Image 1: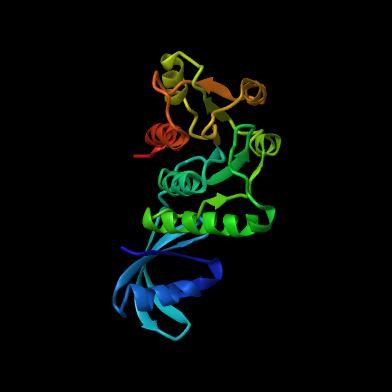
Image 2: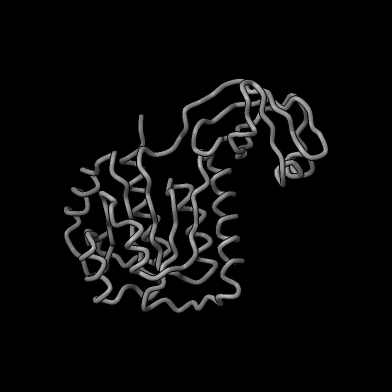
Length: 245
């Protein structure tokens, strides 16, 4: 079933509507007709099953059939991602949204090889957020996770300073039992931050700085995982443990 996001003003009791670019998508791409059903989400509040009543030039009018509790995880998960090559970052954003993250922060670490032109930064961020929105619709998320602009390690650490669980996988760490214990004992009321290094990994000094800010250094096993694999592996494990019945 197709899924769209609307603002609070676009729903009133049993009546709702969709406007903007989604109208063209519904009419000309999906070729939906009156009587067909779709899902809408309202700013992280509720999800609604709706039926198309009629289609105007600039809006699709809906009737609300049913309200449903949202399918979000019980806590926010923020992914701090050392910036890889652009195609890899786009894939990471897409898959991380599917796995339940609330926010993705691209981070400029020492070994990041990608240089983002400041003049093109806004265009990049807009594209990243469009990818997040598309993934949120596809995976039937109740929110659209935010992708921020690239920032320094210190600025990223400041954003997650009050999070209750903070994890950094590192290839020089050992003790998979420690990783299992941390994941198995996660508090479902505390927000989670995951910090993943770029393609070249972290420098030891960076790991120490991140560790001193409250992150637990963990291992994901004996094999060295690529940056696009490590975050998704950890997020998958977190999602499974947090998912409500």
